[in-house]
Length: 271
Image 1 (cartoon, rainbow, N blue to C red):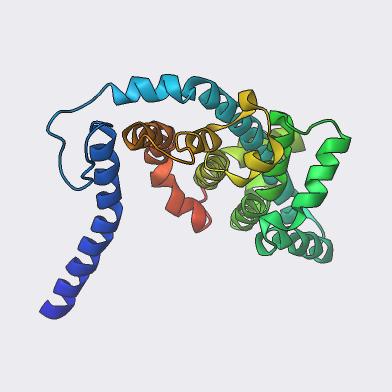
Image 2 (cartoon, rainbow, N blue to C red):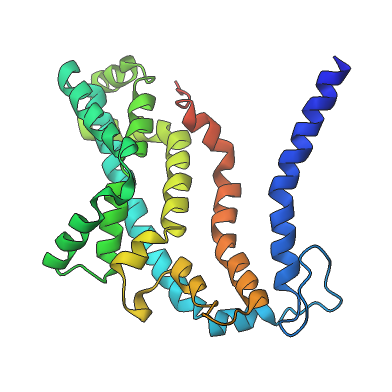
């Protein structure tokens, strides 16, 4: 029993080290001088906080932050609305049709995201959406729809139909039942979908690299790439910019993380 407890603490310690050591390296390097020798595992003798405003200015992070937020807002809102409507429709559809459509949506979780890159590129070019944030958002919505639909469908299967039948008896219309009775129950799974969609959109590197070519339309992951040139790299500024880029998603995760486990297991029914 004692050996098992020691083993458990050892596993927890290793997991904490895997998480905390990269964060420590990120913080220490971002505060070191760019002209000296970098030591990622030691605290700097002088804290160069100026690396952060310099990284914002040199890396054009304000512009790239605005671009990333624009893409994230469109892809997140459209994906959530479409996923919750699709999950609800699948829950109330005829059995064989619902199973067929559900299997079709699950293909999005099986096929690799880059499988249709050439076709997507040509389609966006024909629609004059290439090198636009709207075009990139459409690609992210199409590629990230499967998991939210799966989570919403599984959640709606746990909601008793008696709740909706009682609302119908009280005189609620189907639309009012959906928005005022069903949607408020989806807070756990919606929180899970928000963090998953936000992380995928915010960290997307391949999509902006392929579909955005203009320097003014770049998102943050592409902007970080230009801190490193062929012959040199300003590592403290790059690490400072990386810390700034990771901060919004980290704060979002801390805000909604208590709902994530509930969402992944299907949520809870409130009566």
